[in-house]
Image 1 (cartoon, one colour):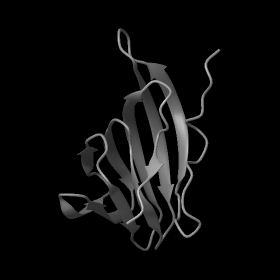
Image 2: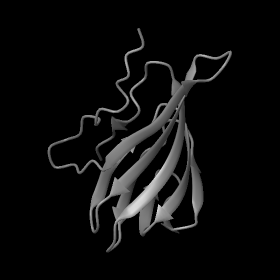
Image 3: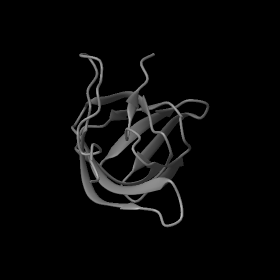
Length: 122
């Protein structure tokens, strides 16, 4: 049977805040060894999501709030509700949230069986 580990929070250092990620849909991409996951991430006000990577590409849309995304090789990007972004596989990033809850709708395309996210401490 299919074991779904993606809904479990990923391991993070004890001082690293991990936002709540809710899996909405998950399906295997036809003819490939990839799984596509649709998720909503809730980042609490004034929190910093610990630096991490994903094992595949992430395409996302900011539903609510505003935050500074610190992306390896790209610097800091300020994104707010209505903005969308893409992160390539393995790119280290963290998120410094503003004064309100930020909600992000994300689509992850990752290798089957891979962890959705992996901590990447400084």
